[in-house]
Length: 273
Ligand SMILES: C[S@@+](CC[C@H](N)C(=O)[O-])C[C@H]1O[C@@H](n2cnc3c(N)ncnc32)[C@H](O)[C@@H]1O
Image 1 (cartoon, protein in one colour):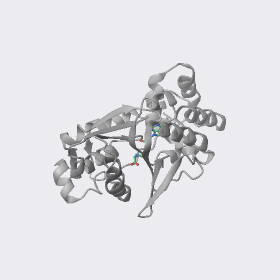
Image 2 (cartoon, rainbow, N blue to C red; image 1 turned 45 degrees about the horizontal axis):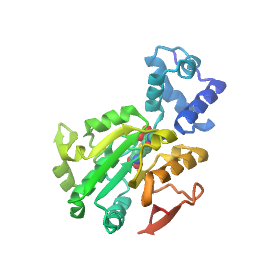
Image 3 (cartoon, rainbow, N blue to C red; image 1 turned 90 degrees about the vertical axis):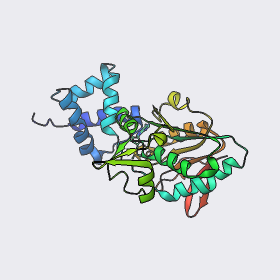
Image 4 (cartoon, rainbow, N blue to C red; image 1 turned 90 degrees about the horizontal axis):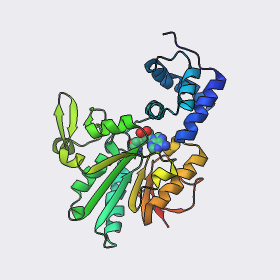
């Protein structure tokens, strides 16, 4: 098939549709990105133009295709033990502070978990941390893309995904068969997955009483309005004094003052006040 052209007007309509449904904002300068990602959908649906694809998602009430659209427009880069300074603060400051309240359990949510490396890292960290041995640990993980959630549930990883895992942890928590790293079933069982769209308030409202939310490296794809919307929903999902981690390169400075930034070891964690 000769690649069809994406006209300016159609690009804007597609961009606005993606924005409305997912919060993800694709600026004019990234038109090529939308074009490259959607061509896969056109090919699979045997469509000859982007206009036909727009009609398909806009007017046919085609929920299945919108889910597939989320799979191709999202950026899912992730790996085990990403941003270890935050993990260190989680285990040395956040968890002890929650335990010091006499809490008998800890509920953690990985709110844009991609292929599972983030929530499974949290599970490994819990497993290594003896003080949480006797308490109830709940790790809930979600994403807007069903494709990545299916991969997460398979829990089989490439060497690239585990490149930050120490030798000791690799031996203890993975089985390497032909270069594929299969996660330990006990760690796998510690995480429950579901599909939650962070800009759909009704969906986020199903998440309540969290002690800690990890929402790392996803708000960067949203415009300010949707960042505020998502952060406000995450705020409601946390218990009073609950903690929020966003990506190391992100900030809530222009988004909200509802959280108190706590700086430990040059790293920020936000606390609900
Ligand atoms: C770059 S990955 C980050 C994964 C992980 N949190 C980390 O830091 O390694 C961003 C993830 O956000 C998800 N995402 C994008 N928009 C979303 C939305 N509106 N609701 C939930 N997840 C979303 C994408 O599908 C993608 O898997």
